Length: 186
Length: 117
Image 1 (tube, one colour):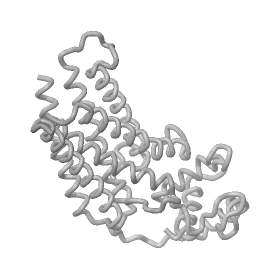
Image 2 (cartoon, chains in turn yellow, cyan; image 1 turned 45 degrees about the horizontal axis):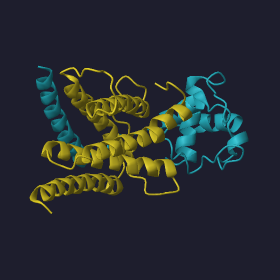
Image 3 (cartoon, helix red, strand yellow; image 1 turned 30 degrees about the horizontal axis):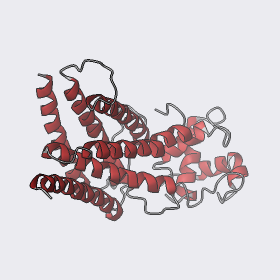
Image 4 (cartoon, rainbow over the protein chains, first blue to last red; image 1 turned 180 degrees about the horizontal axis):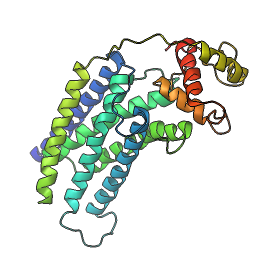
């Protein structure tokens, strides 16, 4: 094994370990913290649940742009044919916006509701699990990006995990909300 | 210029992340002094509008049990909204049958008395 390969693997392990630690920390906090059971932020929505459903939908839209812009930068799609100079920064901005918007949502999930460990409550259990996976994978991705030297497949794979987790989160929260409480439910 | 803006924004979001984590471990739930609500009106409304499907004691029947339940709701306001809107194909909405005060009273009874929340 060459020194370069060892360095690449070390960066990957660092990212995965940090991501795992973040995911586990979120799950442990959600399990041991006594859920407050209170509304938190709702902005101009009628309640926090409605705020969360719409904010998560907005996050998903940013994530879709993230996915497409990443595919374009990696040459998997060809539109736009000429990459504008700001394209990479727009990709970064959309990811940062998505993450920033997720913070008040995650705060309410963790602080007011907590982690659902009962697998018979499948929606809540899957939502809890995917929430932890999302933040763990996000931490791993940021670590890989900042480390500048991980394996070439690292970013696409971890980006895919983040996107998949986010879609699962949306399905088990926003879609559930719109289905059970009506659309737009603001 | 745009790159600089994104750089600064990322730093701010990193700070917001730290603040969120700090809030998670430091903020305690607000314990408000709550008047015990008069649930008699809600109980009557429940008996005349809801018990046929949910059972006289909220034990369930045609509709799901409410006693000791409502895990999918986080606040009484959500129950009231659900009572108003109903669920297409499964439960009628009561928006046109009850006044908002009546809906709130019924929801409060279900939330407090039946579900024990």
